Structure formats: C-alpha cells, structure tokens
Length: 343
Ligand SMILES: *[C@@H]1O[C@H](CO)[C@@H](O)[C@H](O)[C@H]1NC(C)=O
View (cartoon, rainbow, N blue to C red):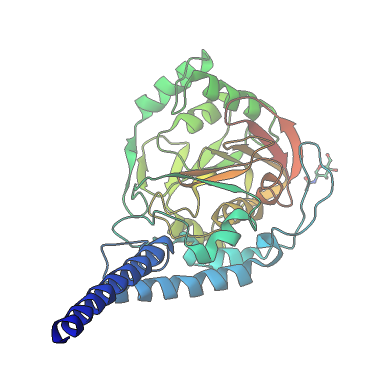
C-alpha cells in the first residue's frame, strides 16, 4: 500500500514538472513572436530596451501630431494623371522643427522587424504587404561612401553622362532614365537644385550636364565637395538652415532611390512610419512655385509593399501620399520609374 502511494506521488510530480516545462516553453515562444519591445534588439538589457522603446513611441506620437493631415493615409484623393492626387495642409515650420525625423535610432543593430505596435502605421492599416530583408548600414552621423567629390571625378562623370554612358549607382539605363526626366523638369536648367540622398555624385553630374547653375546635396553621411557648383549638407544642417531662414528656395528637387528607405532604420535613422512622406513634404516646402520634383523610387503601380528594413515599393496606394500637394507632370522611364511633379 505504502509503495503505491509513493509511486502515485512520484507520477504526479513527474506530470507536474512536465506541465510546467510545456507552460514555460509556450510562454517563451509566444513572447518571442511579439516583436516589441524586447526582441527587436538583443544587445541591450530588457530595461534599457524598454526605456529606448518607450521614448521613441512618444516621439512617434508627437511626430504624428505635428504631421497632421500629411501623415493621415486614410484621407481620400481626387483622380490624377498617374494616380490619385492628395492635398493636405502642411505645416513646414513644424516639419523642420521636429528633431526626431533627423535622428538616429542609436542602436548597435537596426531593428529587424516592424514593431507590432507600429504595423498599422507602416502598412497604411494593412494595405501594404510586408516582406523581409535586413540591412544594418549606419550612415547617419558618419561619412558617406564616397566622402570627397573631386572636380576631376565630376568632370569624368559629366563627360560620360553626355555620351549616355554613365553607370552611376544603378547602371546606364537608370542614369539615362534620370537624364530624360530632368529634361522634362521645370527649373532644372539654370536653376538651384536640391539633391536628396546621393552616395556618389552621379545625379549631380547629370544636373551639371543639363545646365543646373548650383546644386545642394543633402546626405546622411558627410561629403566634401571640391566642385564649385556643388555644396553638401547633412540633415541637421538642412533643418537648422531652414529654421534660421538661411536655406532659401530651390527651383527643383531631385531624389533617386533614397526616399523609399526613410524611416526604416536601415541607414541608422530612427524608426518613422511616415519618414518618406515627411522628406518629400519638406522638399515641397523649400521649392519655388512652378518648380519641380524629379523622383525615382521603387515603383509598381499595382503592388505597394514594404520590405523591412530594406525599402518600400510605391504604387497607387502610397505614391499619392508620398507626393502630397505636388502636381503630376511627366511619367518617365527606368526600373525605378522616374516621375516628374511640379509645385
Ligand atoms: C507659374 O506659372 C504660371 C503659368 O505659366 C504663371 O502664370 C505664374 O505667374 C507662375 N508663377 C510664378 C510665381 O512664377
């Protein structure tokens, strides 16, 4: 009798331990699936990470508030030449005052997944599909990949562009698609042009070739330009100069394969679901009336998606919000289909 009680006690303890292990295992599994806040970044302790996460959630909340209509991607547009046209009241002062837009995520590794709490903001409430491809390239706050732009490098690029043989960053057909777009962009010839995002000066070379008078390049990493027509700045300088009324207006803005990365953390920038919309809206703020925007981004009219943290691809769902208030002017060529807009 005694040994039977001993035996059933033993079985009970075994079952108890087994159930405990199963319970613990499923707890760990499910908390692993919830991306934020802990598993986004494993090099910080949990409390450091929670602190970081709660501060940037506040920043994101503030960013949404100051952004107003611009960041409300549920607003309806009107039919346009290429896709719907969205108009919004844009508070330029507030957009430039917001430091978070230009800040770095400050982590050793960029976040690997979209924090679940931001998923609806990133995907326009599920309208954009999400894929995965991970990069960790800390450009913000460091130097660019080609940090010195010599005159001879520029002259060489300009000569190649003239012959239609400049490889640039994305290959000869893409360079020529940009050159074609620039031909259709009011303000470029003889104008003062802002370039957003440029690892090496191929866009600048195309602008010099076509006759732009002066060029200001905005890039995450520091660049030293030795060419007299080109000056460069980093986001904090862009911000400061606008707020101090020293930036002036541009006749045109050009950006190729840059804006689709804004706010994804890939280049060291802080997570921002509307980072792309804000960059283009700021460009709108600093462009003269009748000036233009020449934009090359990943494009598929029928398929808007985010490949986190690599890039976004724009179609009829997000492109209208990306180009809020811009007039649709010319549909060009290229894999990263060049679009020209006017103000
Ligand atoms: C913009 O272009 C229109 C049409 O060509 C012209 O009537 C208008 O004066 C221009 N505005 C400015 C500020 O240049």
